[in-house]
Length: 81
Image (tube, rainbow, N blue to C red; front, side, top):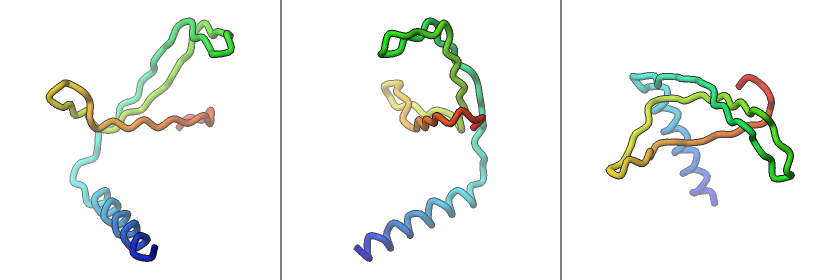
């Protein structure tokens, strides 16, 4: 267990150092996506559902055209980020 904790802490430090010493900052883009007539599982509907999103960096695609570096983080705080 102790070796695993040391490994996790070392991995954390490595990622932190990579972020701090990175020469380029990712481009930040935000936008809005509009869903019309959004239907909930309960049967209720919203005439419009507005989703705001923020992207960091650029998508990287494999040979089949699938994006390989995407991470989706969802939150329901109702805040602005």
